[in-house]
Image (cartoon, rainbow, N blue to C red):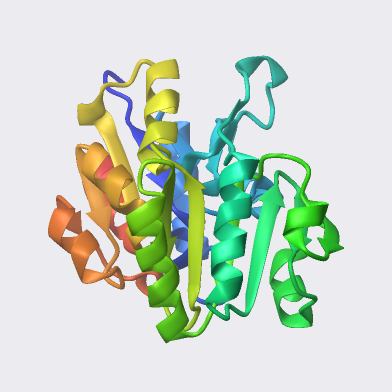
Length: 269
């Protein structure tokens, strides 16, 4: 094959169906494109421990982008290097101080595979226990000793807006912050300048694949930069409107094998 493509896949709402599984058709197509020499990778907001299962299901042998680009490594090759861009602890403590004033429901800090919850919350613990992380509960200003990879703030809709405004007004140069899709009222925070495109670009350069041969699939606002960066930035049919506006193409939804549909036409036809 003369030209190989790099194919970057978001997980939730993109590769994964709503029941968090990968369809047989999509698995088969991704297997086929890999056999033909194309490179398939995952680029997700999830930590590695919560994406490893899918990495193995797809038989991947590539680096992976986690925490929206804050952590990039190669699960099968320790020599590849580890890129970890954490949030400065001093900034995090400022954000915790301010957030508590806004009556937030909880704050979660992730230091790689260690999780710190400001308040004990069984529901949240359920969401984060995939991959069996070590969980600590208590005031983050006391218990957090290391720069965290990411910070999540849970609040109701009104208070969420106030926290978002505070971050935009006082921390714009230090952090990137985004809101999760409903039904979650959550703000996700990583270090400034970090996004999925940064990670995907690192991997593309490693394989010597130019931007014009990068295909990326996504559905949410944490996919925006990646979809803009990829020459073939593809929004899922279920994607948010702002993503569809910047995407080069729109495919079917995550429930309708949108990835398989697109790749069959583009690479396997």
